[in-house]
Length: 389
View (tube, rainbow, N blue to C red):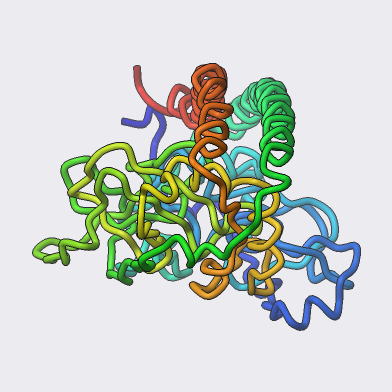
């Protein structure tokens, strides 16, 4: 429960949505300039002109994580910029609401009674009266905003320190990959399809916007497939009474590859360590079915699909105009070059990575736990600011 009175957003902020204007990606590609171009959750490019100048609070209209309490829905912009139609343009009412406080309050607010839609949530302008935010005095608002801004600055420093350590781990991984490539340098290459019986795609299933609990049926998001370990909690819940096909369920030994993601993560691959009967492959996550595991070990294939040779093939053949979402076809996947190594060399590669994997896993897991805790700090601090103890 909030320690402050909750009032409708429209009582605290003026709306300047007339300042926003969408520009297509194709048009922006012709108009790259020095002015930031903003969308629902942040800057998505630059453009050669601006539509607004000054300090404003941008709040996602659609595409924002409204029902995820630990994620940002609103952010501050200052100076000359251009905003598209996926973000509302707001400013605190003169003498009533501080802009910085408004932004923080919007990241604390409960959006469940203000958003509409089942598959893609939207916050229409006519629903803003349903969005309640805290209303301390203006003096209290400025004190809260000043203190919270300082805390965010310290959190940023901590996050950057952890990111630096993660980058150092990445550099060590690069050296390991170079050693693996040296072991395999004289081994002939064959297309991946030579080693596969086939590729099984998941299905495009209508889901809610809510994350699936462990005991709920959930469809994998592309974020479930990372470079190190299968993330079973990265799934969206399925509507009740859906009856999945059995071959869409995730099971132990599945070698799963993503067909859509950022340029760095498209084609990411993981080997699933146990059965997950409540997790379903999506149409963007594919199962690689090895034809003969005596010819090529799944663990070997897992490692070589992460090597620069395979990554170069994937990134060069990925399609899409936006770096935030690239796609690869099954044809591209089938043509990934794979070393046709004998069992001795395969075991050597597996051992190379497994000998260091536990050390890496401990270090990386520890850093990622810290990183995740740091990411949650802003919302925890907001709760401390606004909630009764």
